[in-house]
Image: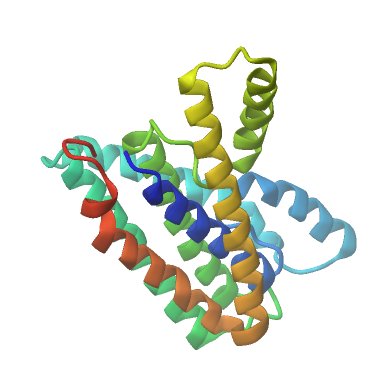
Length: 224
């Protein structure tokens, strides 16, 4: 697989996560376990968004379970399933953007417009996470950068010691690219939020659509 697909996915995840965090009272949409931290902060400081942070993880888990079950139920395999999942994520991102523009801004994260918008975006990122595990297992994670960073440092030391083979060097390059793309996506999400507020959520669906359009060109033959 060529590197551009995971790079675009990482950049989009960073954008969605940052925009969601800023617009939805500290809700992480891609890195849902981080909501445990922001939940504690919300409880300590009395800020809003407690309900969304509480249900984000169950919603995320439920969507991943549905994705897995759909793989067993649908007759399409391999590339067909991957296309369906990328399309599902696109639909969810469009829905999230529409809700954000129509219902936002969200001064209170515990009101239903914010919760609904947040859970739709959480669902979109859950689909991406599940897609990564099921169909893109040969590339580094596109939403979880802590593991990538840990592996980068381990591989970097091996490279500096001269004990790394070509596979390690290739993995190091891929993970560095994903981390950089995610960071750029985070910066873009923050800038878009400052400039456009709720319209910042219109950009991730465009990137998701671009990924679908370019995917045949971004991948090597006979690969998912």
